[in-house]
Length: 277
Image 1 (cartoon, rainbow, N blue to C red):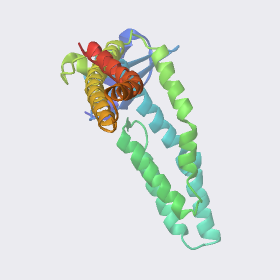
Image 2: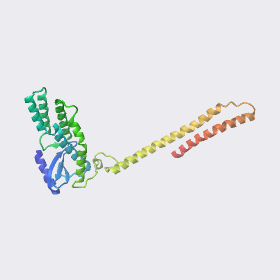
Image 3: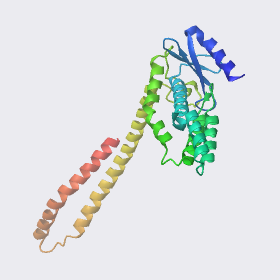
Image 4: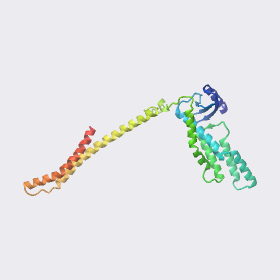
């Protein structure tokens, strides 16, 4: 079916929602066809390939976004007036005949063919093709940098505003339902963003707790071993001499120094094991 006939079919399907002002075709990703419908007096609707209204918010955003970006690219390519540019190049060739003018004319003609005449299908490929053809023309014209790329980047806010306007004026209630919630990917947390984030947070907390418990156990074991080893090493360095009373006094002095340190280490180890238990 020709695109004109396809658009007429979609316009007829959308007519039950209001007087249709225009229909634009889009394939945002994976060859999935959508149609962005504008209504007189305001309002928007996206229909799928069979003419059924789309209520998944992500699909509506994708369709509106690629349509806006392709329209912007087509309008900005060649300085915004490709026909006038080609006329200027032709005049320069006739009057001045500078080197490379024919290549520039060919690049301008190639860009015009790439943009094409409406109706068209807005796709990422179309966007890339227009960009590549425009950059080729800019090279032939000896442009420093890319005025086209800079102009496109400056429209990012306008594109987002258009998408927001489509959502705000949508004829039906939009849903966050995703392909994941329909079983397409078998994802465990469901398709609602809040449920998804809640599930991810819970999963992350569980993993963090598991890591913390393991770390506490390792710390407790290491601390207890350190207490034993340090105490034994310190005692082995004590040189006890003299009478029995002198040896007892030396040992008591040593324990007064070692005991608080050992107790502190053992207490830390005990706290770790208690948390683990």
